[in-house]
Image 1 (spheres, rainbow, N blue to C red):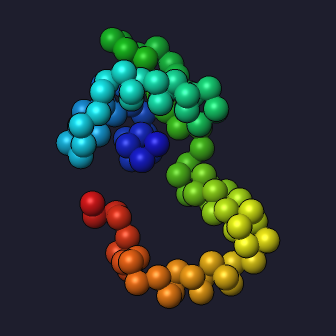
Image 2: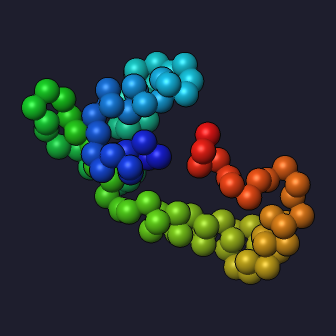
Length: 101
């Protein structure tokens, strides 16, 4: 999803090529993951000129917001305070995050 969101839409090959620059990964692994994400309703597939094209069904911010809300509800009984305290105390986390990696 992190590869598809910025592109707006992508083929398996597009995602594979983007991920290969970061780590060794098999084409079939990318294909399987994209099919699973489609099955779960996170991606929608349509025919392209040469290959199937996948597009996200929801914007990144909406998905992230839902995931954070679910995480806080499950782990912290809906209160964000314990999470914020933990994040502030955790010296292994950077202010910049992983965006630049």
